[in-house]
Length: 142
Image (tube, rainbow, N blue to C red):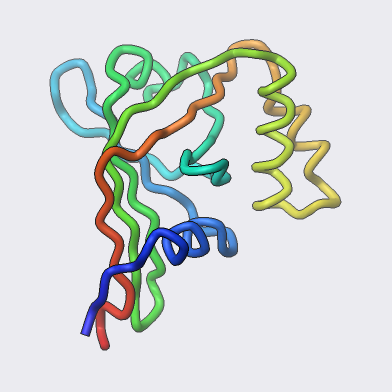
């Protein structure tokens, strides 16, 4: 039987492995837009980078409300679903730091600096997602 994750379990789940977050934003006409993003957890915020001119970047600049889902697709299945708001920054030093940290998680330490430098360029945004509501379940198929 499924059970709720406590805050420590949620942080461990979100920080484990290379799960992607599925980020939902709202298009100007109100329709949904969902894309996967690489992220890291800093304190209680999910941090990721995106281009200011991407669909998700433009949507988040216009409307900071968003929803994020991170899941484990293997039995017994688990997920963390969050709704909240983002803040955006273009600080170059912070962008290099976060881009490198995110790259290290998904590409490995040996390629982190390469991917960090590639993604820490003008036109990229640091996105900090602060959850306001969380639903987190583990053992969904137990």
